[in-house]
Length: 436
Image 1 (cartoon, helix red, strand yellow):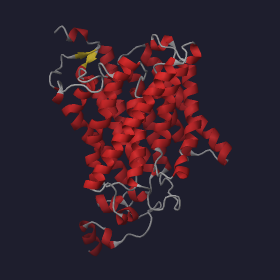
Image 2 (tube, rainbow, N blue to C red):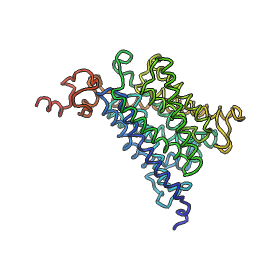
Image 3 (tube, rainbow, N blue to C red):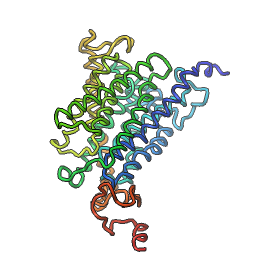
Image 4 (cartoon, one colour):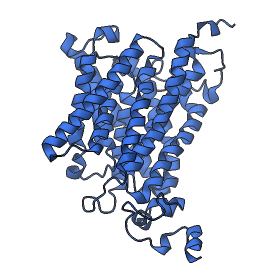
């Protein structure tokens, strides 16, 4: 046994292996969640945008992403070096804390995958698939990787210099995906018929199934971030469950009060909002704080999803209203509810820590959101000019499933498939079948 191998804790390693699988499951869960929320004519395209993100992000993460995010700081706390590009120097004996480094790198990879996939919900029903294939790997390297280094990388300025807290990804996952989703909404413009046509979810059971898989995977996301089978993981696990529950109840309360009807879509969305908000704070607040964080997210996000109609940005599946707003809530409330027993030092305003922790959290939120929005907007404009980021009008009208993928989810065009298919919009293979 090598000296490095002697430091591997088998219990921690076993838990992180399971947590990594749980987090990877979140992306197929997200595909179902988003797939059920779109109209039937583009459900397969929505599933594809999530699934292809798994492959694209994995390639760039192994090539350079991990090294840039978690390698030794190379420039002023902003980015890591390329010493581990291609995963060089990270053999089976390499250890990160008490787990193999290769496992830690894979665990972090699953975070990067689901973050990129989250953005697709903001621009559902109208995105060029070829442009998406270009956007995802470039965005991962330009936005996700640097922010991850700031928050979790060795020497990253947010963790080492500012001292803001983020246990499991409010900044690099939720706020970057939400702010980037908003940027792409503005680049692509609204869907045809936005604010005029009904664009209801076509399959609510699929939405609820997807939300359930997300919730299941979120235990690996949050409790796995303890990087060990220990008390902190147990606390993060319980906080994750509690916040999901109060988020769900808060959203339903608003629906009942405002609309007179609690809905299944509201229940699924409220649970996700609570889970989003507890992500940065699950390892820093007590159970009481987790209940409050989840409830605040459920209530606020239920109103935030309606902002798009007043501000005229078409966030198709409410990535901005749930992930950006929920991520901001959870990250800021650390400054109120952080407890020394969880953080090992930092205390929030309500526990005698003063305003300084809240100020640090606020600064981190503003900088990360501004960076993600600005870079994504510029990248989106560049891709739009070079390739065209938006699908053609006829493709959007007919549906992306048939025009892009030459498939339909439902053979008989049921469940509100939409307008009759124009023969000119069919792929060549489909025209031959029709003529036959």
